[in-house]
Amino acid sequence: MINKNIKENIINQINKGDKKSPFLFLSNNSELLNSDIRNLWLDLLKYFEIPSSYMYSLEDNWKNIKIKEVKEFIEFSNSKSPYKFQIFLIENISRFTISAWNSLLKFFEEPDVTNLILLTNSSESWILDTILSRVQTINLWWNKSISKDEFLTSMINSYICDKNPEILSYYFRNKLEKQDYLNFLENLILYSKENLAFIDYLSEIDEDINAIKQNNVNAKYVIDKWLLKIAD
Image (cartoon, rainbow, N blue to C red):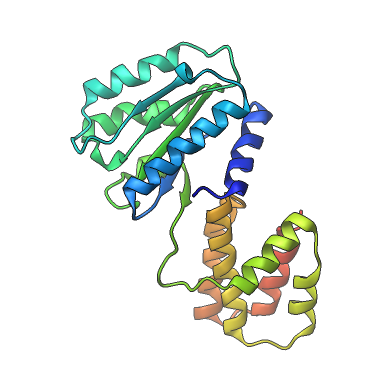
């Protein structure tokens, strides 16, 4: 099921009226993922009172998507919607041929304000880097190499959503080990991907994790920096 914070973030982007990069949803259960995304677009259409005729989709039929299909599909994007947006859903985008990929670059890079593009796939593998650089990636399954800490994610959520300072006391006053600080950063990444928050910070957080692990950077200083950043 799509986290309500993700839905709220998408609604906020729509209300701002700015161009929105495509949303790429990832999960290792493709069937469940596609069902969840269809429910998401139905919820969005209902919320903004938009007829379902302003939803266009390339459903997963287990066949490769060729350039002819793509061109016919994105042709609808040339007609502006009289509503806040129209939705373009492409399921399992790893089915694209190379020529189909290339035909989508401009569509992804310069989406019209009224075009909301939703994409699904099982992973980033098999997706061209030129496509990945143009989308907002949302992981809906946990990286098995990182353990989700319910205590940390609860404090992070409370701090961000409710301005609860509990997490400040925890990190400013307690004497913690380096691994405790690394756990915070790793769970901040998980929280960000699940809730579509601080997406622009992900690479910087990852760099800080590597810096702490490899270069003995002051971990407490790094966490203090991120607590201040995500409070804005």
